[in-house]
Amino acid sequence: MFEQTFKNIDDVLWKEAGCTTELDYTEQSSWMLFLKYLDDLEHERAMEAELVGKEYTFIIDPAHRWSKWAAPKKQDGTFDHDNALTGDDLIQYVNTDLFPYLHGFKERASGPDTIEYKIGEIFGEIKNKFQSGYSLRDALELMDGLRFRSQKEKHELSHLYEAKIKNMGNAGRNGGEYYTPRPLIRAMIQVVKPQIGETVYDGAVGSAGFLCEAHDYMRQGDLTTTQLDILQTKTFYGREKKSLAYVIAIMNMILHGIETPNIIHANTLSENIRHVQEKDRYDVILANPPFGGKERAEVQQNFRIKTGETAFLFLQHFIKHLKAGGRAAVVIKNTFLSNSDNASKALRKELLTSCNLHTVLDCPSGTFLGAGVKTVVLFFEKGAPTHKTWFYQLEPKTADGKPRSMGKTNPLNDNDLKEFVELQASFAESAQSWSLDISTLDDSYDLSVKNPNTPEDAPLRDPAEIMDEIAALDAESADILATIRGLI
Image (tube, rainbow, N blue to C red):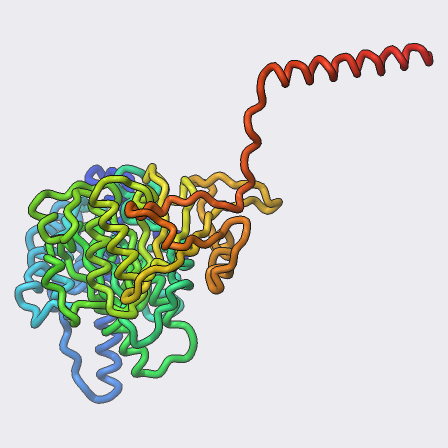
């Protein structure tokens, strides 16, 4: 039911002149979905308060509640078309009354960790792109059919929203930066194993895929009320620079059951890592920082190792923000392993001397759609130097064991990473895995090691030798044919 509703909303958006890309579709769906969710949440809390004889104080004023302007109802519960804003009146109300009112929550909120502050942040960043009030009315009526009243409904909606984020990533352009393949994230989490009571951080949060998957992993089993509260309020933290990604991250986490996400809308790299204190550190870091960005000189001044490469600055940020004994899994371009510039060599030395880089997962081309680069995942622990690093070369195969090319119609799946997770637990050696003694490296700390278990390609043969062999085979064939003729 919900899936068809999402498709119908996309059909409305496709016909809307103000929405031209998958990014627009996701953005516009997100703000409507958020307000519908908030209305359901408020009514649920009001009913719970009434059951115990208390009065609930609504966050949204009566005039701006979803049930007033988006989906007014008659006393019998049916839609009240006579009192529903539409056309130019609806667009004017949304743009000049509703959005400014919602943005004002940022100033009125008691602090950045409140849902009021998140409302203000979201509607200060996002813009209504509907130009037709009739299209918007159609979309609102479809959105009103969604329900968030049960865990089952929220679970189904979270999967549909994830699919929307994935479609946005597959659409190309800059959509791919919001989407990390979920099978890869799940494998990273299975290696790092975050536990209840630990803090989990992503400084390049994107659509919050890492935090949502970590939540699902940690939510398993029967948890106490205290554990659930810790998971809800004191576990997941993130930062995101881009407005659309910030909004999507908030909505994604809410749908995964985290009502007030601890996501800050800020440029992570604007922080001077020399000022990081113990209270700013985390137990677990999971991230896929953006590739190939170029940072200005003033941003580079926040880091000990100066480089314009965004991902390399993020890696320094993550190392600094990890607690002693903390664990991290970070996606980065595979050129990090071998770049010969001074910044790359210094960063590899920093990582290997301050952390135990125990595992490197080498991902195949096509893992990240549209990214155009090969990547590796670095798994490390803070506080002790690296002595040995275990490498795994991921080579997805078909059901009959043949190499499988990656692509939009043939993406990475959980089964592709099953062997990696199993072998990594004991750092076992196999045709795809091996270990490197760090003491054998020179002062460049080059980690681009070829798989020693791959059979050597046969050396190229001399052309004259090949021609002689062909001539010998031809002569042998002629002899056999002459023998056969003699027998006829």
